[in-house]
Length: 140
Image (cartoon, rainbow, N blue to C red; front, side):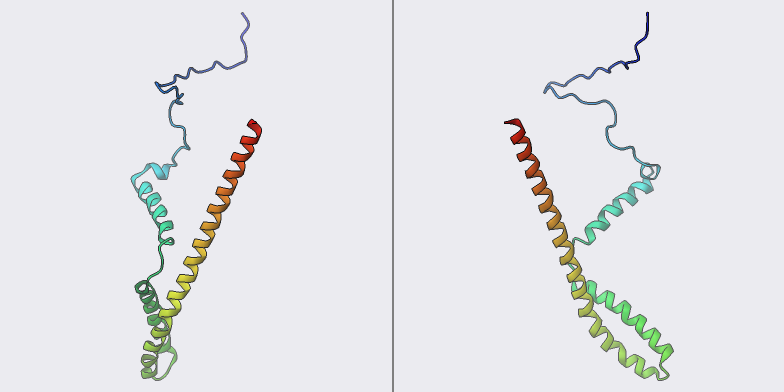
């Protein structure tokens, strides 16, 4: 008897609701890094990192960032200026300037990100509505 080249179909069984479930894993295969416990923690950290940018900026965060920049400025000015008292006197002024600059820069970046996300949501919603209308028109 001659063999056919057509592959044999696998049997799918529906459940009580009539839904046919596929066997085994249906998503993409996890990488070796994701399979390990460290990889799972890293993947979770990447997911939360994205969420960090979705939180509005705070004055406390701006203060700590400004403090780091002001300390760096103090160290540079201590090496460059011959009078150490001038470098120390500039520190509070630099800190007072850096805090609002840092806060309003963060606020600008946050609002820009929120606008882009909202625009992407609107485009996705419009795309879904147009596809639904196209399917409805094709069905009629």
